[in-house]
Length: 283
Image (cartoon, rainbow, N blue to C red; front, side, top):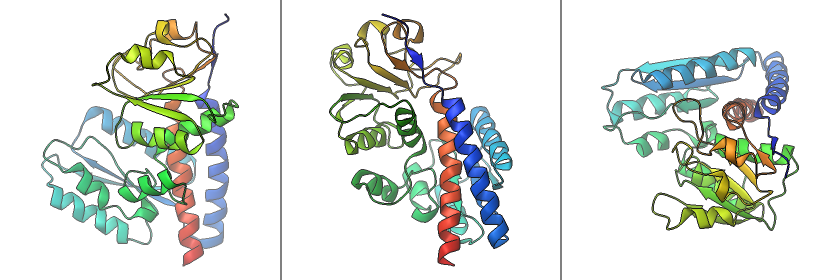
C-alpha cells in the first residue's frame, strides 16, 4: 500500500484567511469599524504567550483589530469573570478568546460562561456546544470546526463511517464527536479509561486523536485506508499519532505541525468576522 496523502491544513487555512481578510476589509469600508477580537491571557505561561502573539499577528494580517488584555497570574475567578463581562458588553468587541490554561485556582467553566454567546468565537460556552450539537446557528469549537473543513477539503464524507475520537475534552474531543455525528458518522469516544484502545482504533474509518499524549496512536492499530486526523501537539513538535508508522497504513493523514493547527486559527478569525457582520446587521 502506498503512503498516505497529507492533509495540508496550512494551504487550506491560507485560503480561508484570504477570504476572511476580504470580508473584513469590506465590512470596515461599509461601517467604518473593523472586526475586533479581544484576547484575554491570565499569567505568563510561555506557550500561551506564544499562541496569543501568533493569533494577534494573524489578526493584523487579516484586517482584524486585536485587543489584548493581560491579567496577573493571581487574578481570581471573580475578577476574570468581571473582565469577560465587560468585554461582552463592549459593542466595539466582536469576538472574545480566553486563552487557557488559566491556573488551577480559576474556575475555568465559570470564566467561559461569562463570555456572551454571540461573541464566543472560540466555541467554548455551553450555548455554543448546544447549538453545535443540535445543528443550529452558532459558533463551533475552532479545532473541531477546522477538522470538519479539512475533511470536506479532501472529500471525506463521514456518513456511514465509523469514527473514533480519542479524547473527551469540552472544547475538542466532545464537540469533534458531535460534529461527526451530525454528519451521520457512527461515533465512538475513547479516553484514558477505555479498555483496549487499540481494538477500538482498529475499527475506525476516521480517527481523531485529541488526547494530548505523544504518539499514543500507533500505526499498527490504524485500519488500512483510514483517515487519521491528529489534533495533538506535544513537546518535540509531535502529535498524538506515531506519524511515521501511521502514514504507511492510512489513506489520508494530518501532519504535525501544519495540519490541524493552522485550521484552528483560521476558524477563529473567520468566526470573528462572522460575529462582526452579524453585529453590524443588527445595529
